[in-house]
Length: 230
Picture: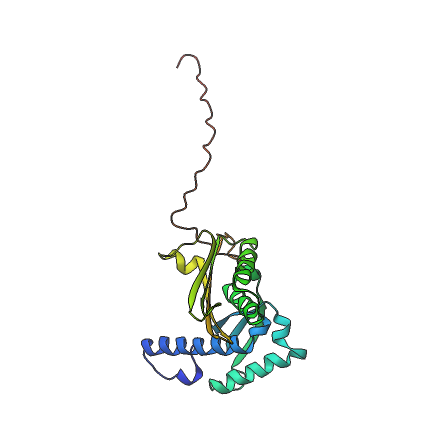
């Protein structure tokens, strides 16, 4: 994830900070530009020759645009902003396998529902139901701000199983935050999804939860043959 401008000899600490700032700014740019295309995250891969940026979205065809025009525009913006040499950065679009297990996509969906004027409770329960039907272990939606009255409050909707602490939360809980500019003021939306365990690693983490115990069926005991005279 190293920036071309940062390829000079810098300390490891500065490199990690530079990489983090680069990722944060890139993610924010893509989130604002591709909100309508179901943007759900970005991955940066650095090869010796070029930097590859993979954009994950629910509608990759719209990210590419007509004859790849949109992706070329985005490539040009990224190249100019981060001072990449010509041909040193490449953008790709990838489809999100399961929309219901992506917190970013669901938070964006809830945001559009609220902006469209749907009642908060109804919008939250619709998102929660869709997440659970997609195979999630659990889900939690928190909406805070001026929901109806002049006084701000927070509403929490949850379903299924959700872990809150421990290292497992890093692998198993997908979280997204959105700010919704409503007429009465700003509203905050938090969506948390507890991913299912998936040995293939497609829809969830390969690593099982540390407190899950699997009891195997006992093996059949083969009776020993006793020969006479022994």
